[in-house]
Length: 279
Image (cartoon, rainbow, N blue to C red; front, side):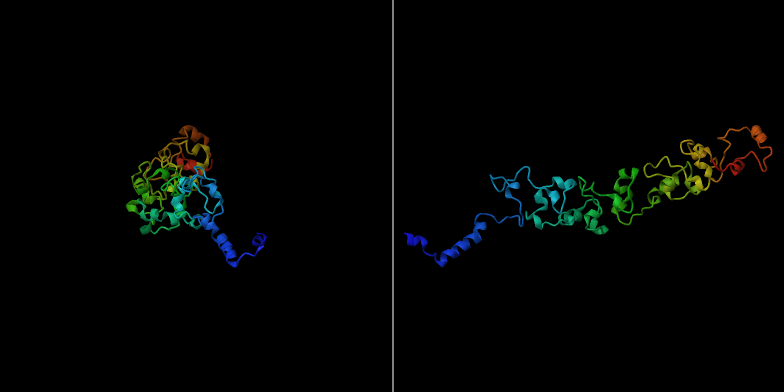
């Protein structure tokens, strides 16, 4: 018996041992279907069944190359990791959203020539695909009232690229129909932003009078004191004409008396401004 226990093992036995340890991981189910992954199986799986995963997995996606934001936080793993080989999944948006790009209902991305870099237009932090569109990444950042305007109001016939960013391209009718004041007759610029704010179309902001009427910087001539352009400009078709006397209630007799020695004085608005051009 002692001789049998201490006798050398045959070469064939040693080969069996080597083969056993070589194929042991396969026999024991250690080849992960998820590819190269170092996490313990129990971080995601229960011990009841391999097909059953934990309700709360012990996995932090923020430590990967693709941090989950917005809608991605509630997306099922298999929607992105189709083969369940996690490290082999592309982090490029288009790899998952090709179908969304090709079948977008509102905008034909392919015809319009949009980039397949989804992040050029969409925000990953949004909770829905449509809401993720960020107009501020375009040549025309939306502000104020524009944020609530339906896309089709500006993008007619389904066209999105090549649409003019000039205000008047959408607001020409407002320009032509304006009566207080009549923009066309007065020769106002079609650069709407000169007087109008993006936050609210009306009322318009105070026209930048400083270059023409420096006295406008004074408190008595600032927005809020006057109500309409007609307060000073009585001729709707001629805004180079203005009246001071209707707001500055000086009687002609008292004004004449106090200006008796003033050269060139007349009781007229143009004369008032000639001598009192500053606040």
